[in-house]
Image: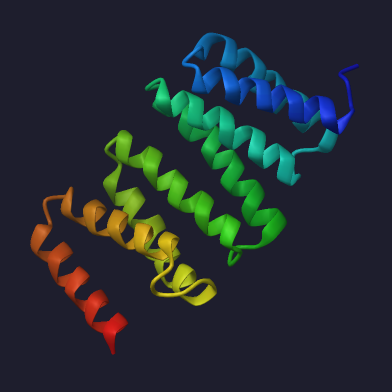
Length: 167
């Protein structure tokens, strides 16, 4: 039976993150994967700590260029955020923006655009037009449109958004 102490689970994640910062990716993967698997087993699939563990593991895989594995874990983390926090919670919006980041790396711009078009109005409503995550979402959405060879559409969309924000 795995150790169920929350401090041990947090320590596994923290050691993994520390190793990742040191670019010791193989060792980081061992700790982050153990943290993700054990946290899911101990706390359950639909727990904020499980979401965090999956997101950290997904980030590591993203940095390593293991995009499909990254996308799998980031999507699982996003699903947990949606179910535990609700679809209009800042954490859920953040995870959706994070998902779009992985989709960029795999050149799935249409899918990223779909997600970001849902995120932008939510972020405006729950944060503000000028909040960092709202502006990040807007920037990523403009590029998602543009990378589909729709740069004129992207420019028009951006001009409309700027006009709306200033009125």
